[in-house]
Image (tube, rainbow, N blue to C red; front, side, top):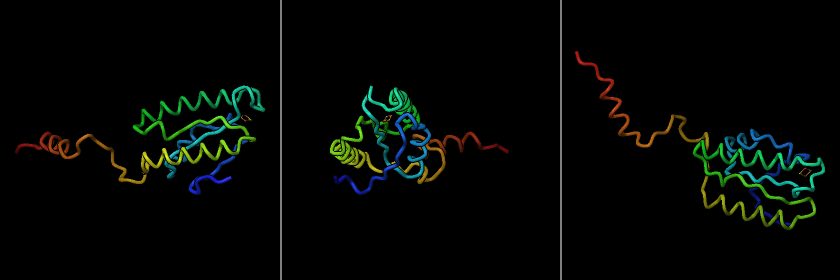
Length: 133
Ligand code: FES
């Protein structure tokens, strides 16, 4: 089955093995989005690890929002190993959603802290820093 060619698959034994730092690392290393898949609730081979994945996913979305990154860049899809067509369709749809968001560029742009208005703040801080003789 075909899906977008710009997707890199990383296999885990179970969605419960997903450490949220894997996702953050992928995004900071250049991925524009991360789609997590796992067995449907109640069908995990390791009993209930996909519920753990769900909790971690929800936490990740909150962390991303707190970092100023669109939470939509991470998506959780329940798709078992027998649902290749669903996986391909979800992957293709996710790639299109990410394409609409544009590149993330986390860690690629200049590394200085961002402000709402750099020009204004430098003027204000410049005046505050002036020392009269
Ligand atoms: S085996 Fe746990 S989510 Fe598939």
